Image (cartoon, rainbow, N blue to C red; front, side, top):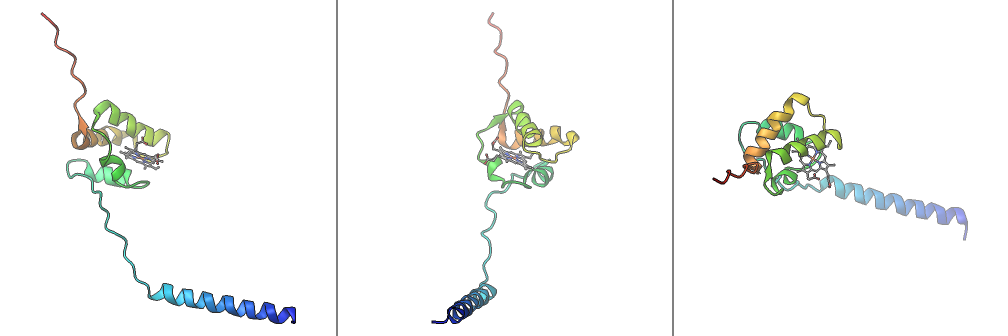
Length: 115
Ligand code: HEC
């Protein structure tokens, strides 16, 4: 067989396949599943969704164990310094407040002195 012919028909087959795939892709409508994780409403939620949803879903926040304020602040700072989240320094406190209020627990209270 003439190698050019073989090449030619392979090429034609590839084009045909590509055309079929393109046609299929064009009339396949699919919608993404709705974002299931939503941040809890509350003061600062806008800030959190604007600043924290750039890289990952809200699951990363909502599935955390309840963290203390100190731990949330460390988390926010880590996002900024280690992972490069473009957080404005003056938003860190507000973000920490929101996270602690919505997904946090109290910092352990110092034990009352024994009398
Ligand atoms: C620049 C991208 C980026 C932004 C913006 C960002 N994060 Fe992250 N975050 C990451 C990466 C990367 C990880 C680690 C992912 C992994 O381990 O799979 C992560 C993980 C987390 C985790 C899981 C625990 C951990 O330490 O790995 C939490 C909680 C979290 N982020 C909270 C936040 C919060 C709150 C904000 C907003 C203040 C935020 N992130 C903004 C990149 C980002």
